[in-house]
Amino acid sequence: MHLPDPAPLYADHLATLTARADAALARAGLDHLVIPSGRLHYQVFDDRDYPFAVNPHFKHWLPLTRVPDSWVVHTPGKRPQLIFNQPRDYWHVVPAAPNGWWVEHFDIHIIREAEQALPLLPADPARCAILGEANSAIGAFAPNNPQAVLDHLHWHRSFKTPYEIALMRAAQVPAVRAHKAAEAAFRAGASEFEIHMAYCAAATQDANELPYGNIIALNQNGAVLHYTELDKQRPADPRSFLIDAGASAFGYASDITRSYAAAGHDEFQALIDAVDRVQQQLCAKVRAGFDYKQLHLDAHLGLAGVLREFDIIKVDAETALATGVSNAFFPHGIGHGIGAQVHDVAGFAEGEHGGFIQRPDGQRFLRLTRQLQPGMVVTIEPGIYFIDMLLEDLRAAGQADAVNWQRVDLFKPYGGIRIEDEVLCTDAQADNLTRPVFAATPA
Ligand code: GLY
Ligand code: MN
Ligand code: MN
Image (cartoon, rainbow, N blue to C red; front, side):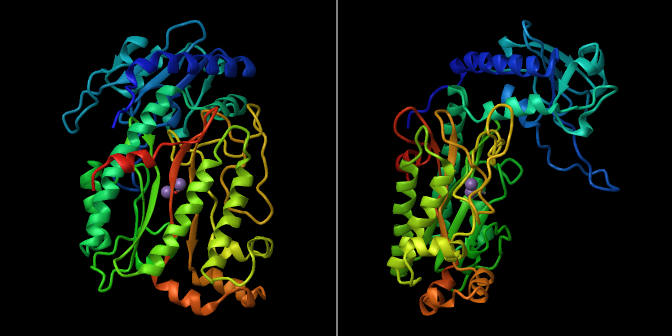
């Protein structure tokens, strides 16, 4: 399938970031934006480092994810500076010399150890917005994370540049390839661990490179929302498979979920198909001006309609939402913003000055409450689960009569269903980043 080339889009991306940074600094009355890439973290009383997670602000400027102790410095009116740490180190592979589409846009200073950045940073840290975590500090350059700067940059980061959209489209490809390999492994009777390994091999990414821990759940394990156990035993009776797994491209994430029934489990397959129909209707609602809170409530109504249609609940959709019955079967948010972080920032922001838009009453886990606007990319991930704890809570709340427990018992061994795509909000129709890649990828 045709994918846009990010290289010619980078100059405009950088111009957008520069303009946003200028505005953020002006608001805060500061002169420089300084972004450390981050520093390795070590395990307590040990010399083993945790997998390096680059500062998301840093990878917003540059497609570099494995360069600890490097710095981006932006000063309005000047070319951006990159202080690039390429240590003298024969124990580890060090970052390759700067290369790629971004190099010509930066003044690059190579350093050999972290402290060599100090004389290359602006003279007065008090005049800088330094964005990062505390352990990135060198000398007087300690991250100060001015709230006004963060609010401005986080709000605007919701609106992806064409360059970022190209990277996000690229992040779908290895993930979908790996989803297909995972489905084939499931159908061959593999264990969760074996499916995970098949996924990583097909994505050519290991657990440290993936944007989040794979959720590979067979049978009733699909009822655990963030199930990451990877059972090594092959199931005696594979009935269902829920896989929530993504991939990374230049620091950008994909986040995709599919649900499958084993051959012969036709009624569960029909339930999956019904959730899939609701999911596609919700994806189509991603358009400029639509309130994501409403999309979440629409998901409840659509899923409760499915529960009613399958005789799992005995009340209509509106009643199920009003009484908390739908919350027991769909106990998470309809989705979230996504980009350089799988759960993107500023999900509740009222505007570039920050603020907080509350969730709808009773909807504790929704991560995005904003109105959709062109350039935003969100996930749409409705699900139906059979979770003992929540079903017991329903009984305790006096709602036992709203549920057909025989039907619940029939579906419990399948765990749950979730279907998740990423969708770009445009000026016109929703642009589903995920589905066309499934259609174009061979099994
Ligand atoms: N993979 C986590 C999520 O879907 O948000
Ligand atoms: Mn997911
Ligand atoms: Mn998600």
